Length: 220
Image (cartoon, rainbow, N blue to C red; front, side):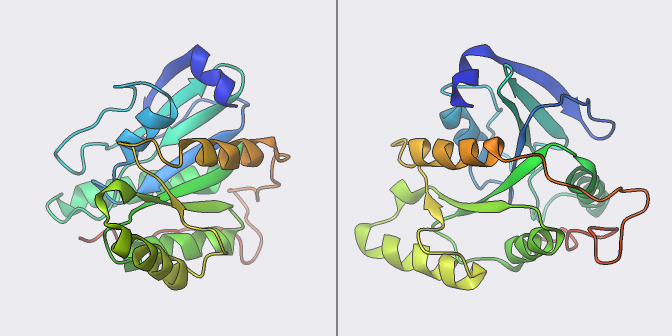
């Protein structure tokens, strides 16, 4: 899949009616200002493919990037920024929910969390919703370069305990030092190589399927 970065193209920004690309898709989610755009730029070996900003909450639509014939990256709107008006939060929530419940080729949701911060209920509730829906997920701890050695193990262990992650997770990542780039690509390629999951029909989901409210209210 990573070979596709040599044939990278921006598909577009969408709030609804995303194009059908018939390629394995990986989604990237996280709180506003978690470093999601920087992580995508690092993965794709580009400086400004995903737009970075000092203003949290800038991404308000789903941005799709096509990696040739290898796959698709979906940059989901950031959530949890308190200064964004509630009607905007509601729109983001509906956009993300519609994507997660209907995107047939979705293979994995990468949840990025700030390694310096304590785990948040918003992140935990999103992870739980993905587990309940049978959507594979991977937690990536960003900005590990900003942690002292004495803090690093403690912070990663706290995230692992809070989210009940397997040994070796969360995956530490730095857009500054490029730590974790190859390891993350390995996980993404493994996910993309899996057969397309059998997703429920969004028009008539069976009991217990992903439905209506996937995400918690996107409060600050």
